[in-house]
Image 1 (cartoon, rainbow, N blue to C red):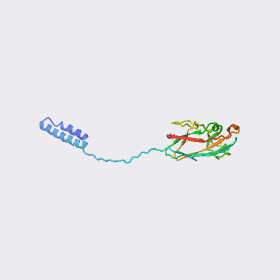
Image 2: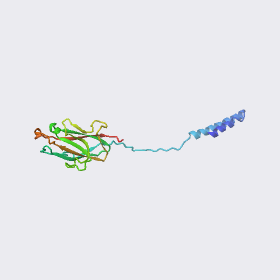
Image 3: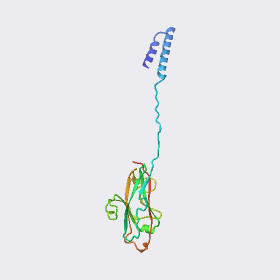
Image 4: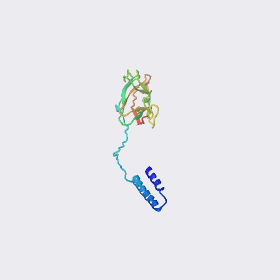
Length: 206
C-alpha cells in the first residue's frame, strides 16, 4: 500500500497538460489494476475434515451382592441377632449417588426387629460388629410396608445421607438385625421379609 500511495502523489505533480494528465491517469490505472490483482487474486487454501465425531450416553448401573437373601434367620428368640455383609458395586460409567429404603411384608414384626447398617467394619460378624465402623442407619425399625428411609433420600438431587459411588468401585455395608431381649410373647410365630431397596441417580463430579 505504501508504493501505491507514493505513485499517485508523483503523478499529480507533473503538470496540468493533457498529455501529462493522461500519463498520470494511465499510470494510476495501471497502479490500481496491480493493487487489485494483489489484493483480490487467488490465495493458497487448505481444507481439513474431522470426521466420525461420536457421542454416547453414559450408564448408571449399581449392583448388589448377594442379590437376595443377604440375611436369613428362623426361630429367632429374644436377644438373637444376625450380621452379614452386602456389597454395592457401580458397574456403570457415571458417578452414582444412592439412597437406601427398607420395605417389609408386614409392620408389626418388622418394627420390633432392630437394624443397624455400617460401613468400615473390620470384622462383619456378631462379635466384631460393635467394634468399629461408621453408622449409616440405626438401630431402627427393620422395615415397613410403605417403606422407611435408612439413609439418603430417593428424591432427585443431592440429599443428606446420600452415598457416592464412583464408576468401577464398590462399598461394603455391614448389616446387623436383632430381636431385643425385651420382646414379648405377642411376637411368637411372627415372620417378615425385608427388601433392601437402593435407589441411585447420576451425581455430577464436583
